[in-house]
Image (cartoon, rainbow, N blue to C red; front, side):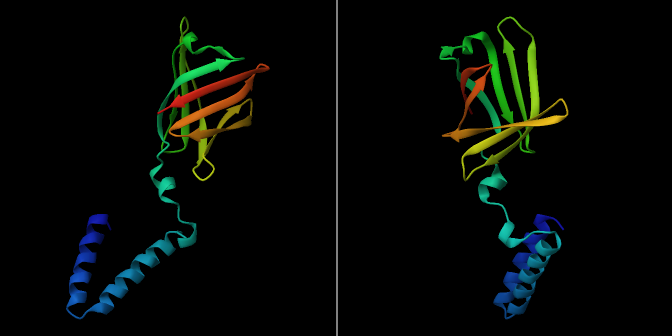
Length: 155
């Protein structure tokens, strides 16, 4: 049954309920609740609106990057982080004198904690890093080869 069929059916039941068929409206609500139950939806475990809409999904451009306090963003033609709707991410970059490169993995966003965790598989194991999300930006604050790496990706 499509959403259009369901909405047409709901209109029919509501219009009929005004003519004294209130039990039909109740039956429709029970049917909808039953569909959710049979589909494995638990009302208490339903996702929040931000989990469903995924406002964090999209393409982020690196606007600032420092390594050991030195600005290194100029070493790149571009540096992008894309968070897909399906939970996959792609980090793509091209150095000023190099070929394009790509790194892929999965991610999990926690809207309550304002964090995103990126996970890549490397050598048979998974490596994960969690970064802050703040005002439409992802802030990378990490160690890289013993030096402090900071990057700000903006949507």
